[in-house]
Length: 168
Image 1 (cartoon, rainbow, N blue to C red):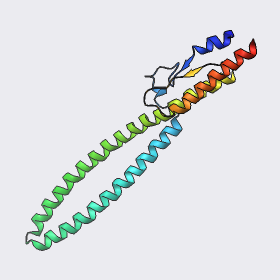
Image 2: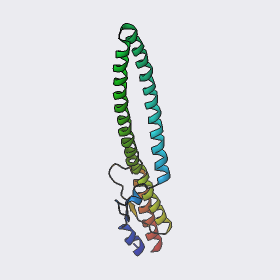
Image 3: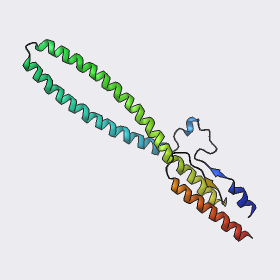
Image 4: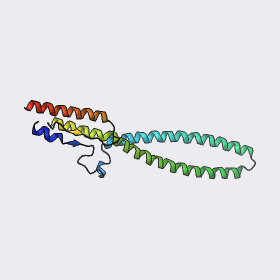
C-alpha cells in the first residue's frame, strides 16, 4: 500500500472530532436546523396544550353553572370555584414550563443524534475529495445513520485499496 493509504487507514472520524465537546459553540451543531426542529416541536406542543386547556375550561364552566344552579350559596360556591381554578392555573403553568424545558432539551439531544453523524459524513467526504482514502467514521452509541456510516466506511476502504493497487 502507498504511504497515503497507510496513513489514512488509522484516521477515524467521530462526530465531535477536533472540538471541545463542552464548548458552547458545539451545543448546536447546525443551529438553524436544530432550532427550527425544536421550535416546531414546541409550537405543536403549545397548540396541543391550548386545545386541552380550552376543553378543560369549557367543561369546568359548564360544571360551575350546574353547581351554582343546584346550590343556594352562589357567592360561596363561586369563591371556592375561583380559588380552585387559580390553584389549577398555577399548577398548569408550572407543568407547561417544565414540559417546554424538557421538550427543548429532548429536541437538542435527538437532533444531535441525527446532525452529529452528518458532520462526520461531511468530514469523510471532504477527506475523500482531498485524496485521504481509507478514513473511517466511528459514530457514538445511539447515533442515527449507522448503516450509512458502515457503507461510507466500506467505500473509503475500497477507494484506499483501489488507490494502492493503481499506485503499484
